[in-house]
Image (spheres, chains in turn green, yellow):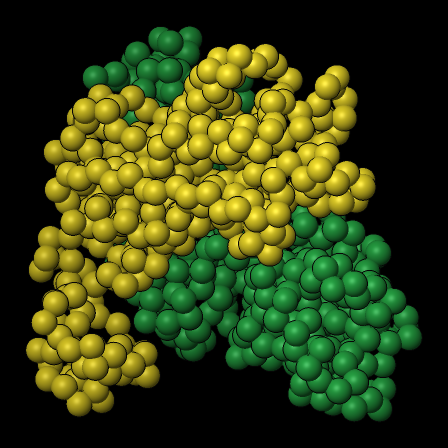
Length: 319
Length: 319
């Protein structure tokens, strides 16, 4: 079996340097660090992880609570988290909840029992009081606006960004505006609904429940959206899609059915996913991957701090 | 703090039944199981996981090695794995390797040190001999065709499915056929390259290296593909894309540049992702989510068995 001395010899560095690389010690030159990692790879060497963990009192496991992994929104958050995890030699324990609170509570329990070092909650289901109870066991970071809780957060102000998108459509002359949402019961959905209601009220418009289309998450939901719009009287002239995936699906459907965008239907997406750029979709950019990276760093660093992520309008061809 | 008696009272069942549900005991009616899970959710109850683990000698953690999570291919595999994990109350430890062997070796080490119960390797980088060495510590399952190794596997025969797609294009009259690939150095890529070379030879066609377009993974790579095809002499009349994402990106680009599909360029994708259905793309269906579910069950069940997944041609409008 390869040992640490073989790695040092291969990399042309001292055993101490190899050990420092393995323990994420900061004072190693980038050049030496790369040589060590290459030697490790060449020799199929792996350190005795338990020994490493014991020496620093950590498991190097970080929990991530999220409803599912296969949607680009959470996929991009996870990508950012995973990128940093790889850099810092952390492994991620996935708690895919499918919106079951039980799974989230198990994640908190694993933090308590030191099976994970820290926890990122991308989509919270349980009460703040339960989160607070567990803060004594390790860093917990959330991806939503906190109130007064001593929890670190990286979040988007969904009320403000939804309002900005609606105001933009209003400026462009739209008075009948609908929106699609992934699930009306989510925390961010409540903020968006409030922004929508306030917008309607501020401009003296008519609130219509059939302008709000629930359960739209994926590209393939675009068809459902267009079918719905065609089934109602006086359909909206503009549509906010809370995911670029849905916006892209709607776009494609419009194309297939010869509905002109933006003349007959204006569309604005959210996230600025690659598909929005490619299909020239106007969108509200949320730097999800960067959010993920920041969530990881907050969870790693400990301490309590809160960061609002800037959302910005990207004007393209669909409004 | 809520205890197990509260849960039993709320669910209207005995404490023994609650305990059985928590321990995944098979002899509990679906109705009672649901009542218990609902009561757990209502009361924010969580069992002492360590006590549960100790009683059955397991961590209920399963490792998953994969290069990245944000591509639909691995995303769909992971979706299937995660679905079963939720059902069986398992958590997944993600080893996102970014194709670094070191991370894979750490996963094997965690199996050895009992930090995880079992391991699914979706994309293998290290030698078979190292995998075999670690089989004594717990089930290891791979997503590729095994040779003689006593490892469980759920896999696609990439040679056969690539050949089938090429033969289909040949039957349709195509003699200049190119393909896109995510990375030419991967295991499945070698099988595909062999299938391509054998196909070329069998039909007495000319092998052209510039008909093979490397590093194509995402929707947005479609543009690169079309630009490449326009830069070479006698471009192919048909294209195999090893991912529907790429096929869809190529399609969209063709549409934007007024290239007629399939008249000027025939396209066949792989996977049968939702986007292929929506964009009416002919594709080779790989049941990825089902593969993920099966990988989980193999890793959970132990024992050694191998399952080839059936790939089938879905004829739509792009060939």
